[in-house]
Image (tube, rainbow, N blue to C red; front, side):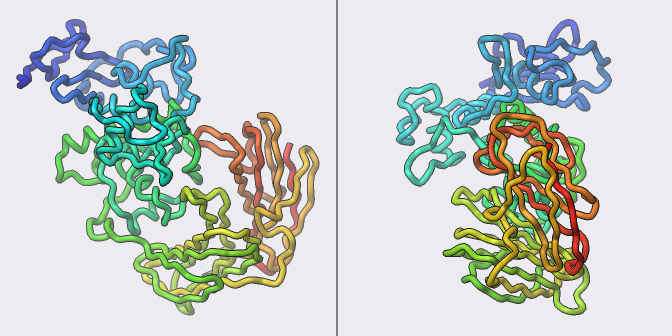
Length: 493
């Protein structure tokens, strides 16, 4: 049994902390604005925020960089240095950290076990066919599987060397650290507003919990898209784990009666409190045959999702509208869902008054149509049907080639909502995609599956960006009334 006493952390600073009577080696360190120490009884690494334990401590000189590739002022300098000093992360033998290197699934689990002081059961072995027997990661993976922190694939594999993507990492973080994740309702729609995230996706509740608890956002994160399937980088992993440990500590301090809003505000963001009555409710979703026609009523401002399958390619018209006299507007998004639950191809509807319209050329596959009202408890109708033809530029499969450094002129005719273009990058290069009269047009760039992107910022029209090799699709959409003719010029250079 350990006895806890007050003892000085270090003679120079004179700060007292709780520590075990066991002999401690280097029991604490000061790094930037954090005091870090280990409590060996629980083997959990605790990060104490400067606002509490270090209040009133004079600010010292800026610490020198630990790694040459994580200089002072680096986007993730603080979390990397803090976790390295705590022994959670390590650098490479060459003295570098490589913050832009991808993290694989096994590495992510080891980071989290070390961050929480959890020791894997040495008898946890032989859990997946592709987990190397007696490999360095076997105990971590098999112990995590035994504790239901992770699951394997349907073929009996874990794929430990695969890069962990952002939402897989969020699930691991919440499960291993023990951060509660609940089913989501209307409140999630005010937080998870990314155009590339369906509120019906399996990972949305983890993404929502990450924002409410303060794990996200991290530095450099894009405001409009999350890119849930992108691989997580070491610097990003450090930031997420760092934030998660702080969030967990705050919640433990405040006890089970603490509100989500107070925990969230302590890490500097503004999120509305969760209503316990609504946090367990799910947005409505329906499986329907295609074509379909439906009507209903939104519950509060919760989204409604229709799932359907297309057996053959088709030009599809989708019209969703609020019924006569209803207040507010309605938005619509259509996602082509991969087996993984991610969507590389999605369509944003054209909103005009209380109507949202999509005209899309779709390939065979599974789709989710998501409808979202701006006013609570409104009634609506929706109709999805095939059209005889389109204009030849109504979706990803009909995207026209956009040559580099050569402007193309296009026209959105009345009743035409979007034009589609594509270009391929053979080697990484800095480019800018520009559309004339961009204030009167929408422009969205989609990196396709063959693009190996990293970081939380993706390409955007009108901005210079380092495009990685692969294919990119551009959707140019109207903002004028649907019966107007809009002419524009698009250029990639």
